[in-house]
Length: 383
Image 1 (cartoon, one colour):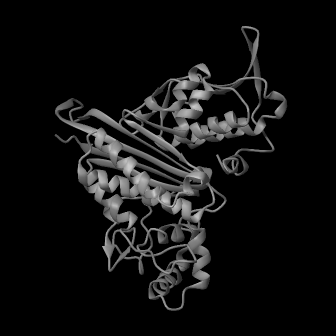
Image 2 (cartoon, one colour):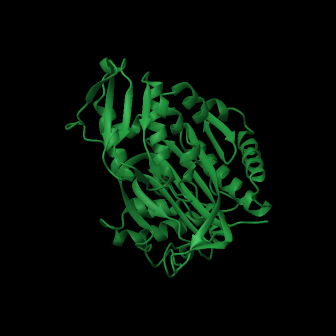
Image 3 (spheres, helix red, strand yellow):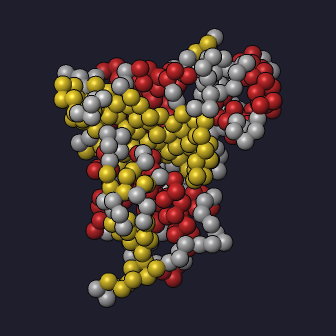
């Protein structure tokens, strides 16, 4: 998997590495990474990254055991997918990996049941790699998009068809199917266009869930299902790098980029620790017909934010965000409203005279080298 080592380069304490513990179990030595936390998110991922940064080639003969000493609650789907990628990287480096983990999950994270991590309970690394690379089975579809895949000029349309058929087989209706397939295809297309890296996606469908009402009783009259998606790529190039570079060389004959510069000149007077230049350019990447690709003046087609908002409006609830570097942008449907073809990401829906709402911006404890999307939609079940 290309460039995955970047996550170790940019995270962890290289000067104070996590202590390696080697145990003898049944006369076989094992390298133990013990996790004592009860919440699985960026903090635990940093602990695991510290541990990996502490390994050396002399230890390759020993199995690595990730031992979670307590049942752990998954923060979101992206957290365990990044852990999958860490395990995949270690196996590629020649290690045998074992995962001892019991976790609780909900409608957003129940895809852990289908995760290739389950195969590592017994250290079955070969089957893990095969499943990680490509699986369509039941309610789960994951695939690693490599440089070889991208050599086929029709790979995005083929991928759209695969996703559409997968969603059809699990009973998703036509309009939702099309929007989900378009969203994933567009995000993968963006990743392939702006980075020279592999891209990975994982989608699972969580079905037969019920809502707990205000009286803390389960309402069994309506069933719900979840569409849970992660798309990520690893790269030194972050989400906003192309736009940030391009604002310095705006296409002379394109008014849309001149308008973007106008917005930048307004926003920059508010840049500080809570709202940064990176935040501005991250939001700029989600404006319709704006591209960080210097070979394109404008981008046509349906806007990504339009697709996400359309799915959110069909949802009972959702949890959608993008992570790049340490910066998080939350997609909240009340802030994804077009005003003269621009989105303000704020209460006023004004990109040119108001900064984004603080509810939209956040920081991650883990630096993600590349771009990662976590998209969860909870829907009422259909006939």
